[in-house]
Length: 211
Ligand code: ADP
Ligand code: NI
Image (tube, rainbow, N blue to C red):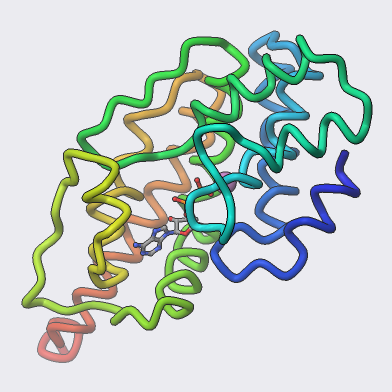
């Protein structure tokens, strides 16, 4: 399955490259072990979780055709396919005001792993890589962050990348499901918070004035 996922994501520029999937797979395995989740379901869902993301051209986040096709090609039985699709359908962040609480331990694990990879130093790098691919400004002090109340609003937002930290990334640590992930998130979140503070210090030349 990892080989299939690797081929699928190899040339992605939407923040869903293979190495993101690889890191989420490894984080998922770690959390699943600590939390006693079903490792087979967790690993498959982690490997397939972004194949039907709304940002991937031709993907469909209602029926999950790419994830289904990949599992059926490897002769997974249909009850396993349904369990994995159920998990994948609960992973994605849909806006600050949209409830995405998972209904199974396995979905809790993969959602946490995906969110851990969106924060910290890697989270900072991914956000600016994504913003760059969409020609977004790094920051624009005239545009205030919005806490999106619906998935439509969140998907269609064209804000600058620094706003994404307030609209999603800095909120994630309080939206995690497992103690294992909450512990890992502490340092990653502190680092990201510090990055945003330093960015604004430099933007406003406060670091210059203090010398
Ligand atoms: P994930 O794969 O973690 O579910 P998304 O599909 O929401 O995340 O987005 C992929 C990556 O791109 C993430 O690191 C996310 O934070 C980043 N990203 C998504 N939307 C934006 C945005 N508007 N500005 C900057 N980065 C974004
Ligand atoms: Ni992801």
